[in-house]
Amino acid sequence: MGSRDTATDNRVDATLTGPGSYPLDLTGAGSHTLVRTLGVGSLVIAPAAAAGKSDLQVAPDLRINWAVFNPFATPAGSPWPRVIHYTGADQSIFEWARQRPIEQLTWVPVLDTDTVVDAAQSNIRTLAIQLDHAEASLQLLLPGQEIAANLHLSVSGDISRFSTLGQLPRSLSLAPDTGSRRQATVFELPDMGELHDVHDLMLVNTPMARPISLKCLSRFMHLKSLSLYGNFVDLEALAAQPQLQSLQLRYMPSLEGLPALSCWPALDGLIAFNVEEAAGKRLRQQLKARAQQRPWTGHASVSQLREASWWESEFGRPFSAWPKRLAKQANEAFDAALAALKAAQTLAEGEAALTRFTMHFNTLKGIETSERDDLGEAIWQLGRSEHALRLGVNDDLAQQWFDAARDY
Image (cartoon, rainbow, N blue to C red; front, top):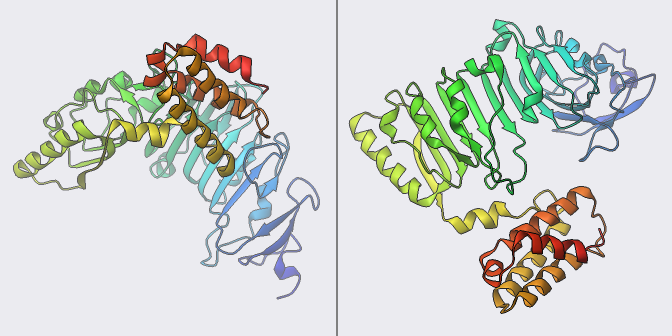
């Protein structure tokens, strides 16, 4: 294959399907080099300071020449990259998507001012918006009916800063930042405007996070399919959705208040996977009884029932985002602190256990703001353990000992 065929020139008309090193005029003449590897269909573009590995590093305020990817294709002939993850402020990707379909786009907008993005003619199959940066609001003009009929829209982070105009997407996923579970109140979903009329909704929370109240469902009165993932309360609100045809419950540590299956006469599909044990057993009995009355036309199952201790061990620790080596050390220190608290007989011994845990990280490199917050969460969890409470530990004491012993 000649040099032009190996992508040394962005202006070539040949389709580029193979692995290799490709110079790109991404933000200027010869500004970047893309190293494409065999079998990888995704592309990550992010600032140098962004977390995680990126394929191309671009400052968030720079405009990108997205057309440089036009010659690229998969071996099967479809546009490459199939999946794009972009962190930055450049909105021209939505202009590019008018001519070149994007299978999946995850956009982390870095915005200084309130912004309206015109995606009315953008051909994007799955669009995920992660509102993690700044505090500006984002309004999205959604595609017309023909494209929107196949669009899955996902919004995460501070979803209160997001709104839409235009046709409803085929399905909607909302994953709000619910804040610390230390907060006594439940999380109330913000007003989502026109999106309340969607037929297919997924609400996502982490299993041990501050719970989301399902009273918000009173605004979603046209649901046919509902998926819940994580920690929720006020499940009684589901009784006001008699038109539901599909219900999915995943990784839910509590099903308290869940109505009987008879509340949904049109229900044809049910999935309960990794849910609390007691309620899961009752749900399994209802599923069998309902099958005797009317067969399920969709998938129906209740599986992986979990005891209370499983949720804490799998999801309760705050170290899941840490590098594996550091997470292993942190979990070992946490286990040692729990064991010391269990053996402790006095409040002073409880203080010593929490102090040793805190000081363990004083010489550990890489403790920045996020890790310090995670360790503060760990101290709070240790202070709330049954062994610590037996000794007379409270939140104020645990925080006081933490602040006195840490150097980070």
